[in-house]
Image (cartoon, rainbow, N blue to C red; front, side, top):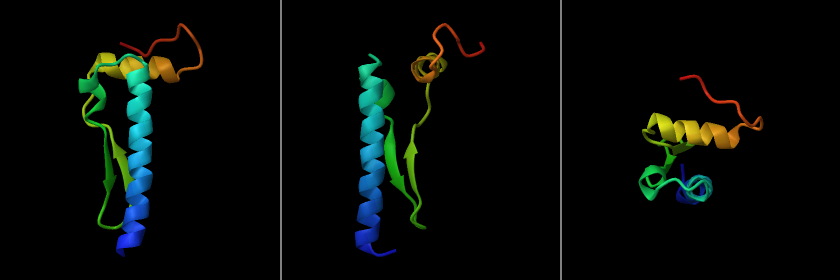
Length: 76
């Protein structure tokens, strides 16, 4: 993979990671939760957003924010 392709893919991953960080900060989650989110570009050129390890209560807050049906909680 040449450098311009890598840069484009990295920029895409960075933009997605930053958008997710911003959304989690908007939920009122503490910085320690969303600073572990990282953009990743593999050697083969695949792009990912690594969420890292999340505490169950953090995952519950994210699930609640993404769930369009109010009052539905994930199973305990």
